[in-house]
Image (cartoon, rainbow, N blue to C red; front, top):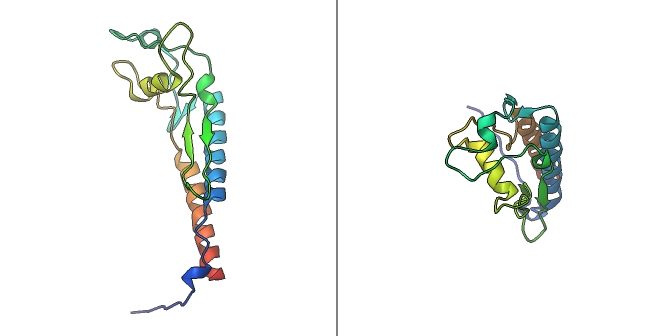
Length: 145
């Protein structure tokens, strides 16, 4: 059995992660835009829109191939609220409808009677890159303490 002990001053660790959270949000946003530009979803290539997805059976949910879902919004983290939020333009409605971009995104993501097109999420590669960033930050903070 090997026992390793390490002393550090918890007071020297900076628990303000808002800058790195915002950097992570930017990484996710850029990857999302890049993926959708080439037709990739979270787990690889997405199928083309099928005619059945243009107007779902029994639904007033209309999907329009506008490309607007590529451009995500970010509500940045702050020192007081260390959460970064990434979302499609949820308040913007499609012309002449009560359907928001968030509604359409959810419909694509879940399928709801039509083929799923999982477009929103974090790819395994980006998740791995983010984990490395967090691990590096944690190691750096512990070394300083």
